[in-house]
Image (tube, rainbow, N blue to C red; front, side, top):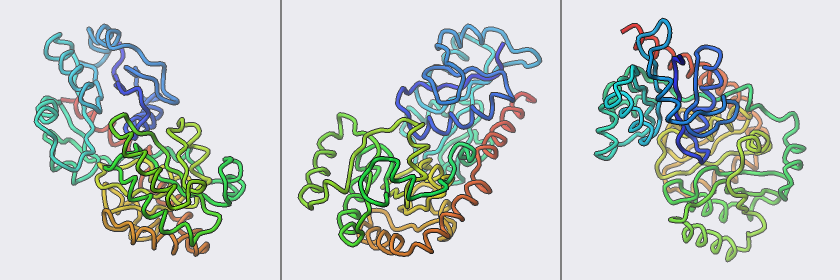
Length: 346
């Protein structure tokens, strides 16, 4: 019987999906593993929830129980039902990145976990049963710098000679409008630079998206601030190394995977002081942070960085080095494995 079940119930590819996929690719050689729910790049073909329950009826050989690793509310619910109602021999591990108090129902779900892994010390303050603090990592063998950034950008097919991007759901919490404010202010001083807003808006935020596009059109920048939509993971692997700068300006962020994937691709970061971003920039070695909602400061930083190729190139080298040294997926997978093994030891 499998010893590890990793759940992925969200059909959309999110930051949670990205980190789960990266860890699974490491774990496949270490554990008899099943992915439950929706597919992830590089992971085994997924099985259904029913099949996961069926395969969990008996404990795996040499273990007294299997582990279900969950990362979202519906996944916690399903695992709790399997353990507590169906009485299957499983234990549940939950990864928490939120740096704020969960609402009542998620708090109850998390209280039922056998072990919690927090991604940061701050996140650990808001959840019980924390067995370890394990920062998310990035697959530095998948995300790699481009040999020639100019050629890589040209190959994307987007206009201009250089590109910047913000990545994530299009909504106020992610600071999409802050990025657009900064881009509208900065792009007139940055000829040849194209800005991409990569992601999609749910139906709830369609008006928000329309308002942003209207503001861009009014500024005469509709040909330089583009909305490619949500891009497939394999396209992001090619696009990220072509960027000069990754710009993430959320009002709130639990952790943030896009900056790490950019850093591994040799791309510096301009970010708000949310999530774990200050740690990513490492005191200015890999990028710059600005206060939350500080569009004018972000615009100034855009012009400063993109007008200084030598400084940007040095940051790019440091970003890749720190992604490998401090935030590799190998380190995350090892930290998670230590939690599993501690549970199995009892």
